[in-house]
Image (cartoon, rainbow, N blue to C red; front, side, top):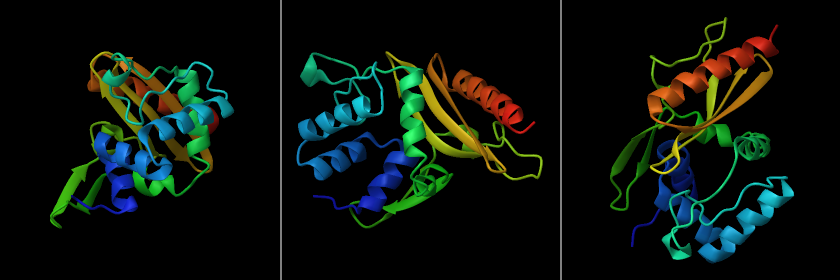
Length: 190
């Protein structure tokens, strides 16, 4: 019986990786979970994501389909990220270090971004002018697939995207993604 706005669900999905919010957004946009998953798979094909198969919008194991897992590759996730960043409004959600929404009882619910590179000084990536480079995009974790991230950031008007899938821990994910993003931004800006 809880009620949330679309904006609150987008914040919860982007900042906190709220799996239930992803389901609600999908069902409400397509009429059913199955219809939304079909749209996801169709759009993946349109984007040339030839190695991707979705069973749900949140990436968790899908027991309804015989414990099937969503399947993808780093290259396919890069294709998806390139499409997502065309929609500049997404950065309103993905760049938030902390966000507050109302819970179902109209109380404030504060969330820390799961993207620790964005949020924590230990991992922070700054540009030569002192501005923060990282502004998104999405983290993920399931036991079977490890810790993953699609990380993006800007230096001046140049943007880099890195994809790290299947890390054994979030610390390793952050170390690898940070190093790759710094290297990519350095290469783009020289």
